[in-house]
Image (cartoon, rainbow, N blue to C red; front, side, top):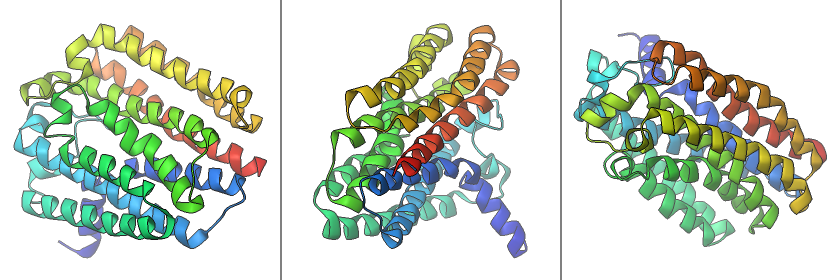
Length: 299
């Protein structure tokens, strides 16, 4: 296998296209700090690398676990769910995937310890909760109805707050409030992707919200959580000193409405549900990105 094939294979193995989520979350944290009058491009770059490595480790631990439990053998793979399929095809080895996951996890922890040293002890709280979420998501949390919530924290709210705190050395009510929609959005990203995988996940021993409530009731959770995202964004400038420019993130609401309409109509039909999965990804990424843009523009 030539070097280009190896790079392409591992880009797919780490679920490269989905890493854009980490990029926009770090950008939002940096935008909050920038609007507060603090900018440190070297530290921002280091945080971007650390969060990306953390996200890679999450994806690889998940791929390894799904291979071992044979979840990905039963799943109906879509462009947005069901894993990469590379381990099942023999394109990568379980040992290499697990080793790379631990290496990424360790290197991201090293960066985290650096920011504990330069920014303060609160980084340790984000690291501990985030680290436990990463390591035990597939083996424990996804079996206890907690997977989606901790994913929203670790790869949503805590990324934004962690980056902001690492750059400024403090937290504000503004930062806490505006970090809630990204957490809910990450929750929704994982949550909707569980719909096509529900039967396979159940065979593999998982017990997440879609399995627990069933797809019909779970679709109502999706609607309510999506609505909450926009309510918070709309209300935020009236609650504390959050710039009204964050309202540009409301531009994604028509896409969210379209996604919701497809979910309601085709909740049990995976092929018909696939466009909603894509729209959901678009809503998550673009809303986070537009929130960041609103802060940068208001600085």
